[in-house]
Length: 102
Image (cartoon, rainbow, N blue to C red; front, side):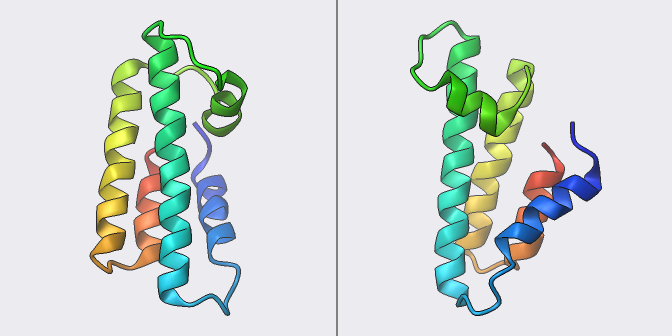
């Protein structure tokens, strides 16, 4: 697990473009969350013994070995973050909350 300041720094990279509009930024964040969800799903499938073609992709995004229940928990957090973004909740807080659990 990364230290908290490193997680906050990750979130800051999503908000560095001050000119980006709210809806456009929301769509970009939803795309990022989709990628994270894909990575967690792929990692879970690999750990369950299903062959996948994106091992390097998954490891580069997610990192080291996680327990299966932790992966499911992270996936639920990403799904929750996506729902919150659709309900116009503060984008930065949603992303910080999501990343804090990783």
